[in-house]
Image (tube, rainbow, N blue to C red):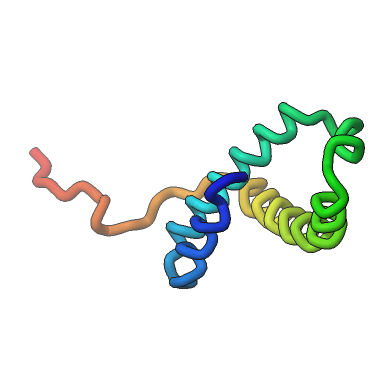
Length: 97
């Protein structure tokens, strides 16, 4: 995931900048998908070196917990019916015939 560290530092330097965090998440997920496609899970332990295994073992529970919480929240939010947009700025205003 080359470059991810620099993107993370830029995104986290201004924590109120949700767009940078969103961009970082998308880039990280894209990198992770590439890894999953290149390295099947059954082969990972034999391919990763000792440090990579230790870091994964140490960090994965927190990442997994966070991702599951986001997934569940999105599932609840997206499970309901769509709501109409209620923005007066978007409502058309015109004169009838």
